[in-house]
Length: 515
Image (cartoon, rainbow, N blue to C red; front, side, top):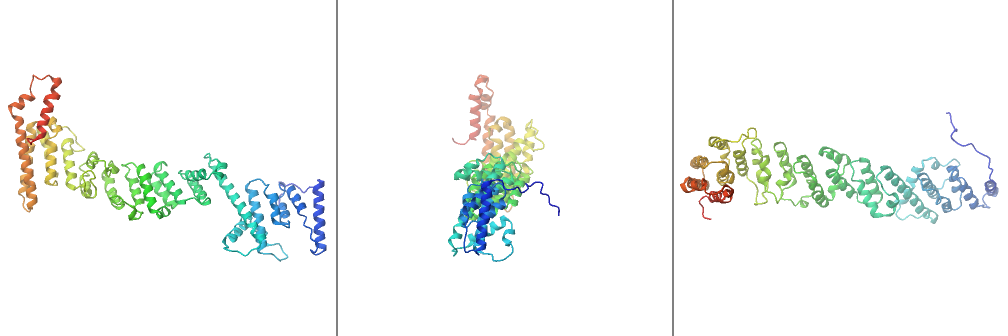
């Protein structure tokens, strides 16, 4: 094997007089010890320290040899404490104390080189640290117990240095000096590192948290919150990240806090139309203990609802549907179509009506849709009716859904297309009368069908009575007085809205009922 020493300095003769004398004294003292077979001990502590000091920046192996030759191991601290705080120097100091502890606990009597010195410094340090920290009440001499804190100190300093170097390499403006001294700043920095989509930053955050005994749960939770709120990752990417990092098992161990943090910080960051993200959110919440979930609707129900609504009603604001301050009918109406009314109707009894109490019912969904269908038409053909015949055709188009309405919703539907301001403006009185007549005919047919219960018959009878009353009321608009009022030329046009229009609207609304 060719060995190239071109990058190393050749051995130079000792020209320094003090160093030359130190070497001479050391050799003389050791020769004396050898001659007397150890009866006359020559410590030469000061000489060894001077020689060690001179070779600090020249030969670390020789430096180690001088320090190991010291009669008292702790005397090496005179040299070690003055070494630069670099990774190499800190590891060197830890290695020195690890060697001293190991040889003190395991004296070597062989004639060959101890295998201990052939192992890597990291391995020796790890073995000794593991050994001294695993002993509960060791029966060791003072010479050993005094060395252990020194070893632990340099191992800690080395770990701090490596962590600080990682922080600097991140380029995030971390104040390394403040990080090592200010515990609050340290905590904020570690948690702040978790607020990144970069895996390296997250792993450093976890490493630091373990190093300084901070909550791993807090780091994981902060990272999850960041992924949802500010990372810009898609839901699939967030799911993959959670799986790859395996953070969920740890998070759900603290079910109560996990559930609360998800509701407070994650749920609020999700748009109501983002059904994929809501699905993943409820999948997370579903892993919490049942006792920690206080919502009326449980996560598994939300998941079932979202899986049905996502393909059929993609624009639905799902969060508003469960908002206590929002009317669920107003939330559903903008996205309600013929293609999805059957879907929402089947799911209605799982959706709470928090304004009115209870849950929605299928009939109410069909009622909402036919009202929208009458005024807006089919999604594919929204041509505005131009005549009474067109409006009557619109009404007939609603016929296939009327049988799905319970009697009370029939009244709401007929009311919505004949006695509203929109009906007053867009439909003639004759058109509204025709609609009422057709509605009356339909209800009578439904009421006359067999297999009707006594309660159902009574309900249909109330609808018939309502329609008859509505018809009589509309007939009053054909009286000469009302026609003269509506067509009056005596009232200036500028006053028409305040006088005639509002009076007619009020008269229309009361439907001949006492007020």
